[in-house]
Structures are given as C-alpha cells and as structure tokens.
Image 1 (tube, rainbow, N blue to C red):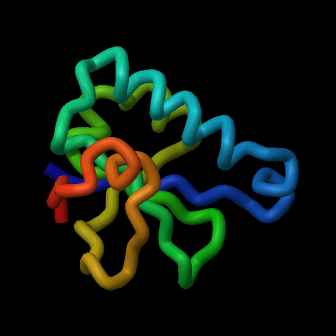
Image 2: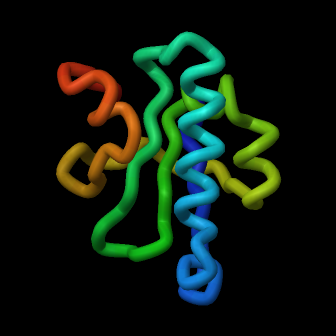
Image 3: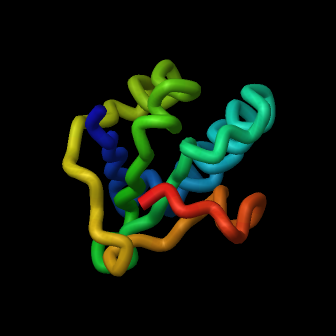
Length: 95
C-alpha cells in the first residue's frame, strides 16, 4: 500500500490547520484502538508537509481526503519526525 502526503500552505499553518489535522488524527487513532501501524510524520525539510503510513490511511482516509492527501512513496526514516506514534508508542517502528 502507498503512503499519503498532506501539504499545508504557510497560510493554513498560520491559521492552525496543522494542529487541527494532528488532533483529528489523534482522535481517530484512539477511536481505532491505537493501531501500531498507523503513523503520522512531519517532514522537517519541507514545513507543512505531513506523511501518513498505510495503516494511518486505513483509519483516517476520510480525514486525509478532506485535506487533499496524495499518494507518495514511503519516506526514509532519516527524513521524517514521528508526530503521534512517538508519543504513544516509543518503541513503534513503522518505517
């Protein structure tokens, strides 16, 4: 399965869209029993870009579609920073 990417503009980020996305994903994550394969990642080299694992797509596809998520390849572990999974499962290794 493919990963998904959401890109927020600087204006959207300034309005707090990134926080809204993170909180909505967190709620879905919890409602689905905190699946270990559902990860949300930020790309530090590209502010406003968030990547979602195939497991994240499975539980949050309607949310991600509302943010116009597009398919992308899996990132290299060195290119991303876990957003939610790191907080809940320090030992999680999705990538």
